Length: 438
Image (cartoon, rainbow, N blue to C red):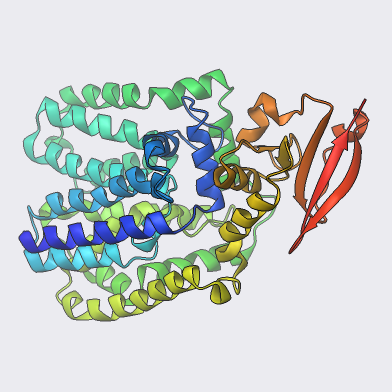
């Protein structure tokens, strides 16, 4: 176990250093803004990611160390996985699982980026550990803690709800209903509801806007496009890695771990089904990966195959890190260069106050890098958290707007007779407008 702890601690140290050095992405900056306007929950996502950024406010003088609480929690998921696996795996298989997680593009390098995925993976694995405790100990405490973990997971990301059908499918198809202490199930339900109460209350107070937004986002599109399904399948094969996927499929786990089959494949199948309704983002099935990797680690050849997996994703990770820190390479990819572009834009627009932007990404990034509030102008782009803030409507007789050239303006500007004047162009494609009215 000392060897495993050493791997865990060294990898955590590396993550913390990189997390402090890499500037926040636009989505991270958006969640950081949430942490300065704490709510029970939010339109786009549950509140856990904002709470984690809030916990890191005191670290902001240390470059981008505001990420650290979330990164530590995300890395804690590996520790929880070790606690589960040490019951059934030998040290070599646990080590393989750790390497599969650490070099996974989403669970590894991706865990430096603070999104709702970090806390949901932690609570997914904690719930898996506690579910195993429920099966083994069958006591009230285990059932109550299991519900608590699921409730907190719901405060992290709505995808935690897929844990429930995985449990039900396992109990039904493996005929485990006699192993369930049904008198303690209400304890799971009650603690689950208590610990997800912030999300339920916020949605009740806001006409269930967040629930409806996520359902529309994931299921409703006017017509089917075959590339949705093809891109989903190919992305998952690449992210999991072909040999790892093959090993996981071919593994027949011991009877005590047969539940891994359901926690690995049901989420992947669920999002495969939704790919016929809408485009599925590559990270959505991330909750399936820990169990997929556990199954793969059980395969007898995985200890020799792991070198190819580590080599492939290790090179990709090194290339991404190099690209982030070398400006000449960084500018080859607009997504990688975006945080640095916004950092420069924050400096170039600092003199214009009050300043607005034309997207939540730009507003949040300018706010983070300047440490001065920059709001998104109401109705200038799709509805988001900024549109719910009273500051989204300018209150004075003059304000400034920085936007990408070619992007439109909200109709109410002309209705309220605001007069606009272009006062500055900023490379590559930003423009600053001044708006005034009598």
